[in-house]
Image (cartoon, rainbow, N blue to C red; front, side, top):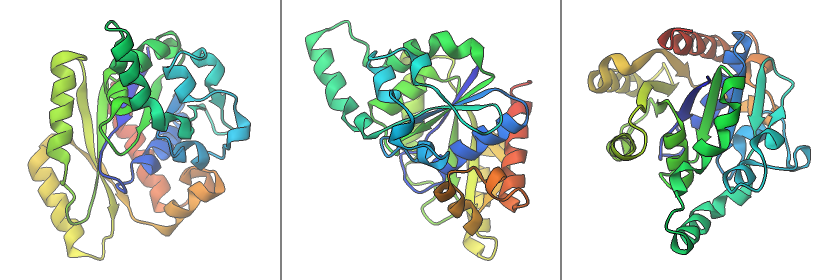
Amino acid sequence: MAKIISLVNQKGGVGKTTTSINLAAALGKEGKKTLLIDLDPQGNSSNGLGLNNNDFEYDAYDVITNACNVKDAIVKTKFKNLSILPATINLAGIDVEFVKKMLEDNSFKQNEQLKNAIKEIEPLYDYIIIDCQPSLGISTMNALVASNSVIIPVQCEYYALEGITQLLNSIILVQNNMNPNLRIEGVLLTMLDGRTNIGLEIIEEVRKCFKTLVFNTIIPRLVRLVEAPSHGKPISDYDPTSRATLAYENLAKEVISRNGN
């Protein structure tokens, strides 16, 4: 069965989507059959792998609302061992739609729709990476309920830990009520500018708070990493010699090592 990992942080601009794309691609290059699920209505993970709305008929919204079978919505990318379940702006209305369904049907479990939808494909992949939107709404709760673990990206900047307490409380809520097996895979330090003292201070602070949960790999702030999505490529294909490519290769190896496979 696939190991399902969500990338979650309700704070925007922390490198969540960048990590989702590049970790998934790096896992694929390590020989792991990988599915990236885009659960952000902005569809940045989908665009970052070179897809546009004309490249697919169904998206994550259709899967979660049972409008189609999950297999019909998955798109195989041109990158090694990597497929994607894309997203569109349709996902933006999921919170309102599911609340309405709950009012109409008391048995409707709004936070379990993704889990139920992807059950049949779990044996087909080694890893399923879920890119969540920067909020703790219904789609993110669906991701947490469906996942085995969570990676929390934290940028090496001032206010880095802002909102983390709320996120941890949400994870505990899911563990206690909906998914007792959910665990924190790790905390990932991102967007490090090695020229500044604040970055090094944040690294020390985060490691003091989360100890062994913090990944050894730190993702640097690089222009090439920002450029890659506009070319529809992960950094490993856009610039194979980049320091960011090496960083995501190391992160993939850490994830594989932590999961014993």
